[in-house]
Every structure is written in C-alpha cells, then in structure tokens.
Length: 233
Image (cartoon, rainbow, N blue to C red; front, side, top):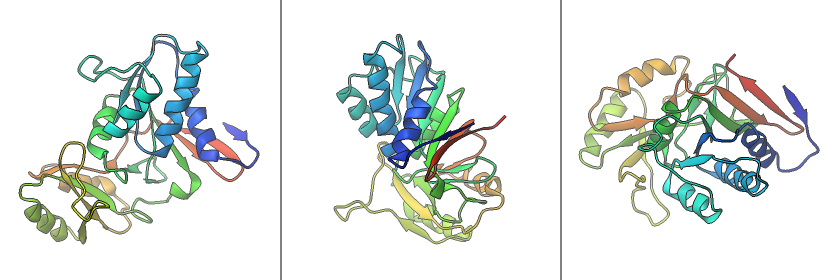
C-alpha cells in the first residue's frame, strides 16, 4: 500500500498514518522518541474528535508517560492489561527481514516488554533507517546492571565488539528508567543477528539488548515523497 504526499514532515505523516490503524476500545502501546510523540498527539486529536472511544494507552518510558499525561490520554498499565492490541514505536535500524535495532532513546527494556505483549507492533521510520542487514549504520545498545558492569563490558568485548558506555549530557553515565547502564556495541554487519542475541540472552548482568527479532508486524516508512506500509504478511 502506497500513499503519495507533498513534501512536508513525512515522519509526522507516517506516525499519523500508524495512529489511523488504532480502533475504538483497543489497548495501545506508545513507544519512545519523536515518532511516539507525533503518535501521542494524533491519538489525542482522534479522542477529542470522538473517533477512539474506550481506548487505553501504555507508555514505554517515563518521558512518553509525561507527554501522554500532558495531552490527556487515558492511561493504564501492563499489570492491568497484559495483552496490548497495537503498539506504535520507532526504530534505529530495520533490516530486510523486518528485524530491528532499538534503544537509541535508552528505553529498549520497556519497549521490548511492550512489544512482546503486543498483538501488532507497528514501527514508524524514515527511509534512512532501512538496511539490508542490521549493524550497517547503527551500534547495538545493550542494557546492563550497574553492579558488575565492568564484567559485562569484558564479556561484550570477547564477543567481538568494542563496547562504549553511553554518557549523559552531564558527563555521568546514562541511566535507563530502570536504573541500568547502556553499552553501545559495534558488532559490524550482522547477517545473522539471532546468533548474537542467543549469546547475549543467557548472560547474567545483561538485562536486555536492542535486537528486536521477529517482533515487528508492520513497518511504516516515510520517504521523500511517499509513505509505504509494509506488513509481515
């Protein structure tokens, strides 16, 4: 499905397109970053227009939660609604098999929890985020516990990357909403990202990684003059 647009803010248009897939009564996951903020604003508009009665929203981060509250969206939690109908989120990189690298915004743990609980995971990106293989343009974020993070760093290095501790603007290590650190790990081109995920998953101290494999059901791609809607079907 292709929708042609006049040149304008295509990322916003793509997020609005994704928000148009929400139906009344749904439980909706809200991701992190500029894409999610566009979606939050559009959902608020649709609620005000009476188009989405009965929906409930679950934000993936404290920042998205604050934005959703500011726009008056009806909020709930995964504890109350452990199954999500549809989530709208962004990604740092998308490969030809619809696998993702996420975590540039620092919320990969909560985003993956929400994605795994979602029947439909809609990813909104611009065309620059598309790659044949993951790792062509983006390092892999790996969230680790602050306790023993040096040992996690050594383990990551032994897997063949050079882990870089993510820093905040104040010069201190960046901490996630869960109070963990993030190492950005350049593994290079990952033709088989599932192999790297399999090495990371069992390691104590590694809380989560930004490889989202097989979780996206829809990709909405904003390019210079059009929006494409790609589905796993």
